[in-house]
Image (cartoon, rainbow, N blue to C red; front, side, top):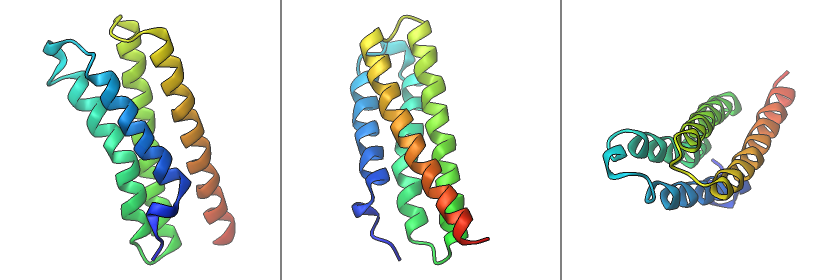
Length: 120
């Protein structure tokens, strides 16, 4: 079993959650049950799935949870784009968060590739 707290992808995932909560606090009140709820849940799913994958006994199970995490990351990116296009998000918050998301996506995809290579 891996210690997820030592993984940079988990730490970066937590940073993404913090940033998303900061952004979601600025969303209109009427988005409380819409975008705000959806984007916070999707962001929480990123480090949560990394942590859950670490508890699995096989590399292929771990890889599956990493794939779920990357799916959640793409959900967050899509929801951020919607927020930005609707004028709920300023350009700097949007760009800064995309940088965090892109960094995380690269790290997760790199780890997925490594696991695939080791299991072929």
